[in-house]
Image 1 (cartoon, rainbow, N blue to C red):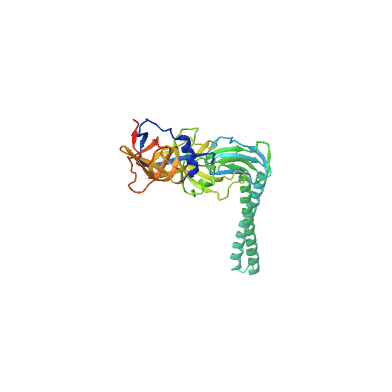
Image 2: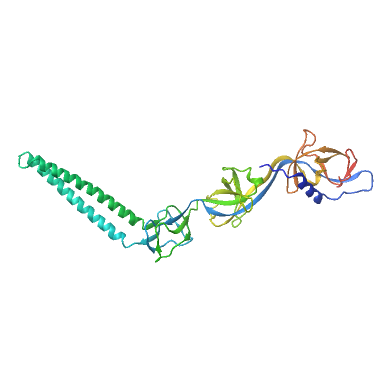
Length: 357
C-alpha cells in the first residue's frame, strides 16, 4: 500500500535530523556521502484489539423451568454434542407419558377397527351384513387413523419439549460465559451460557481514514499476538466499515485469523496487533538527510562524482524510518552511486568536494 508523506512534514523531519556541515578550511567542501540502494521502503503501523471467536452462540432453553444442572463451567473446552445444562420442568415428563398413552390407545382402537372392517367385508359376501354397516366401519377406521396421526404429532412435540430441556454443544468450543446457576428459574429464551469456537478468531481494530481507504474485504494482513512471540500470522480482512465512529472519526476494520497447527495456543481474549503497511514502495533508497530543498517543492540531492557534486532533482515516493524512496529521470542516479548526506547546506552544483573517510 503506497503512502506519501506530505512535503511539509518530512521537511520538518529533515531540518531536525541533518548532520552539521563538515568544514576543512580550504576551497573544496568536506562532505560525507552514502551509497544509493535499490530496494523497497516498508513501514508498518500496528493497531491493537482483542481476539474474539468468529463462531459464537448464546444458548437458551425453549421452555421455562428451573436450571437443574450445568456441568459446563466458564473457560471449559467442550466437544460438539456434549451436555452443557439441563432444565427441571416437572410438567414435561408427565406430559410425554400422557401423550404416549394417548397414542397407544389410538393405535389399539384403530387396529381393532381395521380387524372389524375386515370381518364385516367377509360377511357381506354371505349376506349376513349389509353394505351400510361396512361403510360405517370404514368411516370409523378413517377417523381413528386421523386420531393416531394427531397422537403421534402430540408425542413428537412432547418429546421435543423434553429435548429442549437439555442443552448440547452445537460445535467444538470454549464456554466463554455462564449466565445462570443451578436452582435458578430460567424463562424460555433467556441465555444460560455463551459458547465460542476456537478454530477461527477475529479482531476489531480502528483505523484512520488515510489507511482504511486502501483496504477491502479479502485483503491479506499480518497479525501478531504479543503474549506468545513476535512471529506474524496470516490474516484476512473480513469487514471494512464505510462509516467512522462519531467519537474518534476512526473506521472499524475486522480481521480474521484461522487457528492452525502452527499457532495452536492462540485463544479468545488475547491481545492482538494488526500490522498495516504504511509504506511499501520500490525505488532508489537514500537517507532522509540526503534531501535538499524540500520546503521549496523542488527536492534534490547532491550526487558525488569523483571530486565534484552534481545537483539532481528527484521525486519523493515515500518516507519511512528516516529513509526516502526516490524516483529520478532515467540514468540520472543509479544504485551504487553516492549522494551527500552531510556538508551540503552550502553546496552548489559543480562545486569541488572532499569526501570524509
